[in-house]
Image 1 (cartoon, rainbow, N blue to C red):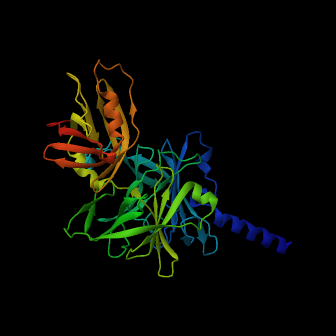
Image 2 (cartoon, rainbow, N blue to C red):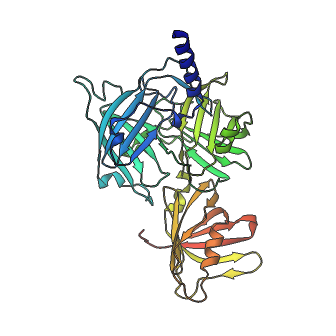
Image 3 (tube, one colour):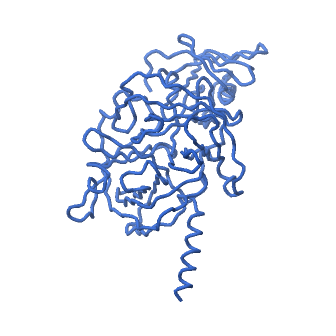
Length: 427
């Protein structure tokens, strides 16, 4: 009987290590029977970035703000495809929490405007025994949860202790097929603030082209102060030195893995790394840090990086004309209003004659990609150029700012969209 039990446990363990991090089953949460919808967030295996004794942190929370914080002490390595447990399976520490939204307009001072609100919640433990607190658990004096209302926006835990903040990026966990638009050629990602530095850097950013299989890797070693959302404000002025790296795609992966993600080794990086890019445009990418032997030592959830797009966000823009290289020019009809605005969460919005439109964008250096746009269906006046404007925006490949004008170059060098700043525009 004992031998049969050991064989069963061994088989279950083998199945467990083949599951992706988000699919691993967890102890049942007492509040999951609540009729309110549960939302789940997962740090994934953090390896060398573990918080105290906790190698993985998960949060389940419902619309009423009731939730469970699960702290996992088990050591994990991550090869880019699935976690491998390298210690005995220890039980997670389950902490019931309540989330209270902090509404403070001072949080937003000096921040670029986002299309979707970013919310901050204070988490309070409701069932810790006497003598146990977030501090004794190694989390800090306070634990806050940050999330964007955008379905693919940021999710973070902020661990506060005196004037120090540690940040843990979280991935939204979904049982449905991930959505979020088509796979993009361009990509731009960055880590959250790293309390445990890599190559002396507190922030790592990577941007490039999947098609050209080239990327720019930047280790930012500037001293930083964090705002209420966990975003860094640089307090020193050191110029990070970029490293040009080659993306070498791995082919020794399973068919199931290849169906949902692409995995690249970063050839030429000063620190051994792999980049995992989901084929669904809406899911976060992941950065796998390795030792010299190629063994994974850390796993980081990456967020979309829109910092290089800040020049686009400084103004709202109004269309002057669309000029094609075959001498065809489109100008707005009389009293026709055509605008464009870029937001700090990767959203783009504007007006095309009588209709409003929205979409998303990504930029790296001076290259620019705009998603297919969703538009209202109002009847526009005769002679409008609405269709030409919306079509041209989704064919943009790069941009430059010349004085008060924004030039959006259409791919294949076929034309240019020329816009001008709107003075003192309010979004």
